[in-house]
Amino acid sequence: MSDRTHSLVVALEKDMHDDDVLVLSDAIRTLRGVLAVANIVSDINSYMAGERARRKLQEVLMKLVKEGWDE
Image (cartoon, rainbow, N blue to C red; front, side, top):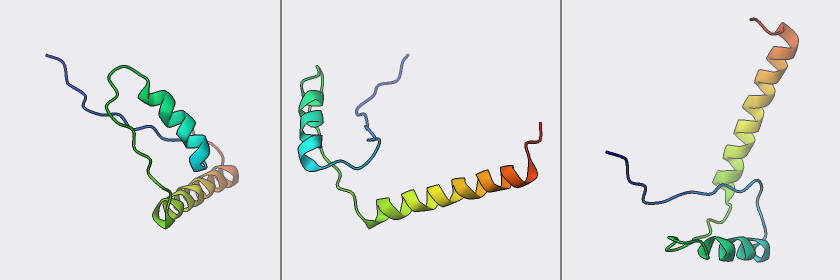
């Protein structure tokens, strides 16, 4: 028996202005089976999460540069 999916989440490449998102949201609404599309507005929490992830990646890359790649 296969699983049943009730929703999908779309992550945007970068934060977009409302006017630009409207075109994308309208296009998604036209797809068969789409009941609703909701915009999630960026806030300080999403900004901080992005900055923390970016910092962690920088640390890993710097460690890799300094210590080299162990295979």
